[in-house]
Length: 324
Length: 251
Image 1 (spheres, each protein chain N blue to C red):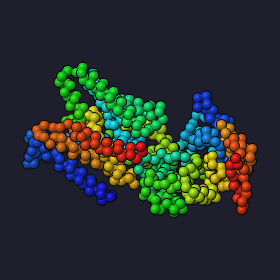
Image 2: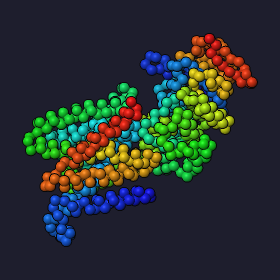
Image 3: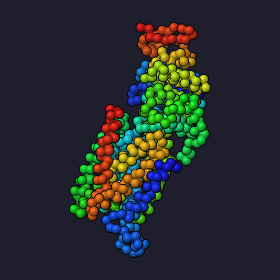
Image 4: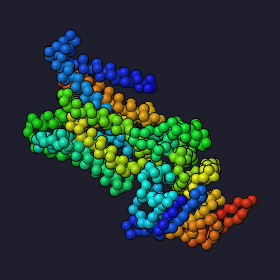
């Protein structure tokens, strides 16, 4: 393994292990394995929260990388294309309807999140097919329109809620680590591993897809079929993630873009970097979110947007200057 | 080895290709010429499998191409479009290695043999200095060379090139011609579509003239004023200079 990687991995693991010790409430090391307040906070709140942050950040970054390759565009991410807001609308609707049904062991909320994400991607693909273009303009404009549409839907549903529900929905929409237990983590973790392994095994396809439709066809990749499989899989992942952490934006833009700048000559390294740094970035941001202005907590989605929006503009300007 | 039988294709009511019949043998070097909109690129897209809803039959090595998987097709035929669509950074090495993609599977990544084939081609095409360059930073001629090398690495028997000489400077044209002649001598079947017959006529041994979706002529290369006039609507002439046949527009 590459030395740079090993360093990144060590920093990452150290961070993930250290962060739960730091916070508003001091963790008493001596009572970590006793039945105390601080051991409860450590084991039942901070550890799961850190793990959720890592899994979510890593998956969002990876989803961003996958979308950028499939759309051949460094600004295409689940958030900018309106996939996350589609998932959000589905989930908000589910909460309003008080859905507690399950389907094949999955909560109805995940299914609605997945459905919302699929609707967004279907609309974008439809538009791209009608205008026969996957240009920045087509994709981002469709994303903007979808974001408007789903935002108004969410506001409408919220308007119909009672006041206390509205506050908690609003908080979720700002993005953040909901308190989760090990049961949910046990559900998320295999999906996460499956997502990473799937991406790893399809790395050659993802690389070839980023070279364009005719190139892919000529090299033996049925890109139309591949695209659909990827979209369904990624939408599923996004639907579930959004139901846990809300529509957190820009992780899927910042991390893969940096990976591309650092490893433009090796897709495999890019993948590894994206998976590790995505997790680190969100864990760290979440740490800042809960420690910056104690005792209050800043929604983590607000911090990522504050970092991400200028970054987005920067990438947009570079892209437009290059391609007109 | 390629047999096209009664091939027709239309988009809505517009006929793009009309009852095309063509036989292409191994190691042939074809130029398919014709004005813009004659249906040349469509023919290539059908041969590659990019367009599937055509009428008629196409056989490669006696097998119907509709029955072949994408990967099986990519072991036989490679297509270099007129314009590439690169936008994200991709290294030349990655582009070349993609030529071995048809020989991989979900669990089988590129093998040491694939890398050996890659290195051989890098030597043959003189691409050593380019391997780690981003494809987007190369000139038009260099990109064409990389894509041709990638098709060579793909170990196909048929290479299709769509207007390969457009936007190339004379030196790049000359280099690409040399590479194509070498490949053809090595046994590859090469088919070029272009309207630049003046540049290409001398290097091929078979020609076909395509106009408004019809084949006007196909077979051994001969200079025929009538066919050229019928295809392009203008007069052509030729002269032989030091054993080289030169074609020019005579108006």
